[in-house]
Image 1 (cartoon, rainbow, N blue to C red):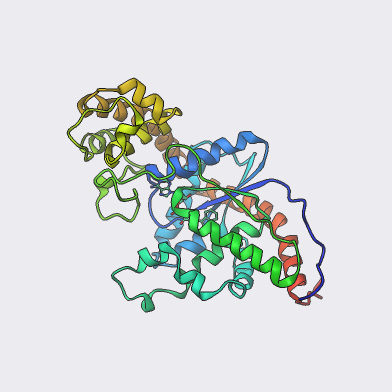
Image 2: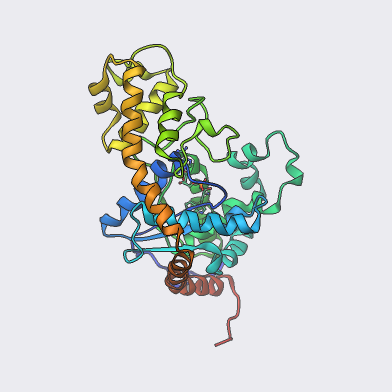
Length: 347
Ligand code: TYM
């Protein structure tokens, strides 16, 4: 092991997060990620939000659709209040440091760590895992690179990303240990609020997901008001009224999910929602939830549609964001290479 190289203990607080352009955005993405990304801008910490197109191609993507979805996620960022003057918004492939650092981290991380990831297991369940892309297995190492390339200290995500963030910490710690440095921060996951795991509207034990074959299981950010209201009306529930206390939602996953969604949309807490609706039947609660969802989501859908009218402007924002991201990433990548022992004599 070599002597410590330029230890960097004083990490400036910095937030980074990303969303895959591998399909449309769901209410889960909005409440678990997007809405919180926008709120983080008010905390006086630098915020960097990425559209992770390199992650998306770990499973096959039609090139035209990938371009469209990358713009659509960017439009969703803008529509939910992420301001390119206050945050950096860019797509991952425009900053080549992500792929470069990922390679270095691939050589630090162990294959066994990747096989243990539940998302990898879920995505290959019932399929021939040997036939999935190598990228799908290495995916969490690219995610660690996204985070560590900016010396990120905090990452807002939904519950499903927790294991990947723990792995990021392990990779950072192993790099620091192997090279005898204190170079990469041990990043903190921010999994906060009542909607860290929004569940399917058809099955309260399954995560709401863009890849669920049933469109009725999710609310898409592109759904119109009627569709949102219809999906909520038809959401699976049990026959009992809402309980008097939160305790009463135990073992009622569908009811719990709708209460959590209401609280997150309203910006309150599940306790407050239960206080307001104690004893109410779903026949009363669901229309109220539908009204709230439409009131909160429609302006976002409309703004997304407006942004999507001008793809050139979206591309300009991504390009400008990529240049700003690269300015932060480049010296960190250069230092990483120096620590690893690579020569950089090209000036
Ligand atoms: P992705 O694209 O699957 O999801 C983006 C964000 O949305 C959250 N999310 C949910 N939150 C609550 N309930 C749900 N049903 C729900 N579904 C999705 C996710 O937790 C996530 O925060 N690997 C990541 C993308 C990524 C990333 C990163 C994130 C790549 N590099 C670096 C943070 C930092 C992913 O596939 O997210």
